[in-house]
Length: 494
Image 1 (cartoon, rainbow, N blue to C red):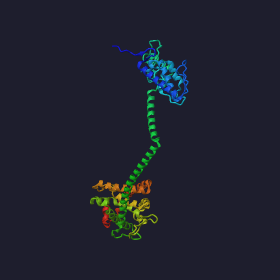
Image 2 (image 1 turned 180 degrees about the vertical axis):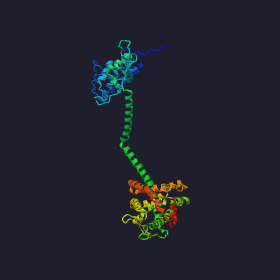
Image 3 (image 1 turned 135 degrees about the horizontal axis):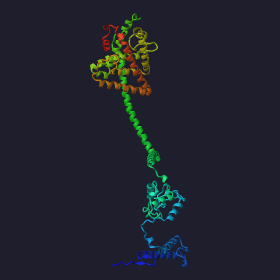
């Protein structure tokens, strides 16, 4: 059964549409008549003119209703295609493309200040919708890619089967590559703007660098509120970090001070040991007599130092064999560092304060050991005394560091007794060296800490050299049975 179409050929409007429009016209006319009666206003319509012209003396509401009637009166003159538009995209003709692309300014901003839409552009090659300039011409993505692929090759390899008269449109652009490429050149596309592989790689790197710069700039150009908030959070985090670091440093520095104070107290308590003083007969009648008295005087210093080391917990926990070996191997080198604590460079005299020991003058050392030994020894002592003048505590801790040294006497005794627990002794020495460095750096600065440690190490090497050069010559003249047992054990290691 065929369905009957209720369609008016004269007005070209269907029945449903016609009913809707007729009812709207009747309603608008009724409203218009009512308004005219209420306002006692007459409206004269000129039938010779179209419904676009109205002479109305009514209010604004009546004028709007009349305008609706005028619009509805023109609806029958439109085609049905305007009511039901086709979904197929319409591509502009060549003249339209020329009018749009030449009359519209190249800028994305129109003369009235409004932003021009990209959909207003059309490809000058195939008339399709374009989105911008490619190779110095307005073109679509398809023609852009086509030109990049084929522009750098010889154009003679492309042949047209219609003698170069093909019309290039959106529908026909794929049919003839030759005519399409010629049109690309004709509209002004430039093949020299096509990037080589090297240029592409350089551009890629430049884009990545710009992206990183933009990302970094974005972090700096955030909103003021977020910036303040972030700044406050950073300040708070920095403050907390500083507090935490300060707390850790404070704890470490407190621990450092405790260790150093324990060393200082132990060093001062060493003189409480009841020892028989050893003096010198003045003047020294013979060189050997002076040498005996100086060697025996060192016995007093050795006993004081041993008493000092025994009061330290780190020394007390070692095995007896390790204690004896450390004393035998290192004590004769420690004498020089300890002598710097008692030295008076103005009068060239050695004297331990708060003791009854008689002073020892530099001239006595010169008479006993010779002028060369005296000069070298005094130069070392004066350099070490410069550290004592800064802070006595530094040298007192250095006495502990050099005690826990392995191989200090290697230059004078290749058969140095072995240490049973070398790793433990190494950790003890490292602990004192670390805390001494922290103490000096915190109190006197980094540069001063470097200078002090360099002086201690360099002078220790000179002391090793001095003892190595003079010990055999000096000790061969001694009667070892007239020397104290402590010093005998030290001499025998040489």
